[in-house]
Structures are given as structure tokens and as C-alpha cells.
Image 1 (cartoon, rainbow, N blue to C red):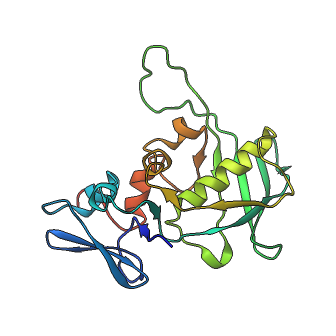
Image 2 (cartoon, helix red, strand yellow; image 1 turned 90 degrees about the vertical axis):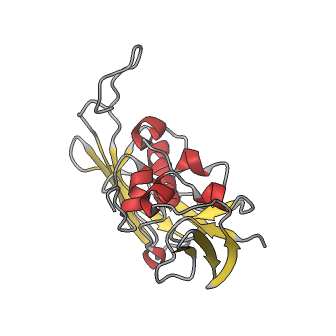
Length: 213
């Protein structure tokens, strides 16, 4: 079994990256499984925002964030809660573990900046994406993104309702920069409620890291 790298601060968890002066140690299961190859010291915010761990541990192919969740999910059909809101359930692993998803129509033009030539406004909806009850790791951004993609895709018949589908929140290192995107609205056509649209910013802020630290 290949080592899974966790792209988060170790803190009190058994998995993650510990900063020790000018070096970083990668922990998996409470044991050091790698030492960073990049020279010099890094500000933790800059390090995680720019996904420098991918360069620091080039031998690690698989990456997770907060939790490595590989299981099945089932999206239930949504129902209207007024003109602009749809709600439904996502089941995680079995019928007992379910969370409410909410899709809200958005009316604010996006992106919140001047448009480039040829660019048009879009109106990406807000999605409340639940997590498994027993593995409620807010830092598991890939799983939150995956759930949001599933419930929005189901509206266009691009994801099946009432059918178990196996998913994983573990990313190939090549996928990580595209999944942990700097603009989820433009990349995926929706926004995740409660998170910045910049998922790299979210990765830092969920760990208590700020750009001015």
C-alpha cells in the first residue's frame, strides 16, 4: 500500500506535515514517512496556499486533506423549498448516515471583478455540501467538492439519483492543483456555502492560517 500524504498541518492528528525550523516532516499514522526536500524555511500559509507540499514530497503520489474517505454515496432527488432553493439528502456508506444538501440560486454576477475581453457574467449557485456524520472533517475539501459536484450534476441527469456510487477524497498529485482550485465558481460552476471561492484560501483558513501570520 502506497503512503497517503496529508496536505495539512499535523497539529494533534496522526497525519500531516510538521514544521521543524527549515525542514518539514510528513507523518502518516503517527510515524514520520518523509522529509521535505525543499531548502529554506516557509511561512505555513504560503506553503499550503501554493501547495508546496507537492514539491516538498515529490515521491508521494496520493494526497488527502483532513481525512482520506473512500466509500459510496447515494444522492436522493431534490425537492423545491420555494422558487430559489432545492434540498435533498446524500447518504454516506449506508442508509443511516445522511446529510442535507441545499442548492440556492444566485443572482449576483460572477466573477466579482472586471471582465476580461470575451468573458461573460455567470451566476454559479451556492451549494451546502454535507459530510459523513462519523467523518465530519471540514478540511476534507475534495469530498465536499465531490458531493457538491454530484448534487448539481444530478440536476442535469449527469449523476444518478437513488444509486450507490463509490467515490474517494484521495487525490493523485497531478489532480491536486486542479481540484484545490483558486476559483471554484469558474472551475466548477457553483460555490460551496461557508467556504471562500478560493479553495486554497479555505485550505489555509480551516487550519487557522492567515496570510499575515
